[in-house]
Length: 68
Image (cartoon, rainbow, N blue to C red; front, side, top):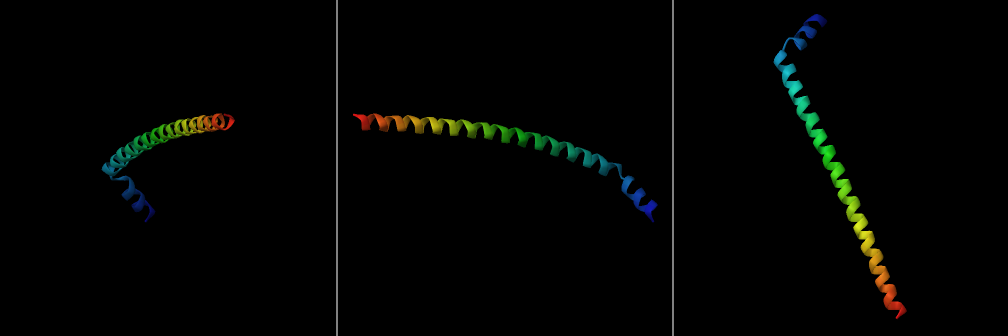
């Protein structure tokens, strides 16, 4: 029975080729998504830095008015 199952699983070469193609497609998609995540993280870091700089600038402006 085991021989029959193993023979059945390995006899279809088109399935193996299809799985190889799907695996390659999925690996490419994962790489694309990883690159997107890195880009979005960098964009988020830049936006946070810009927000912090604007907040510090606004804080300094308020302090200037209070001293006058």
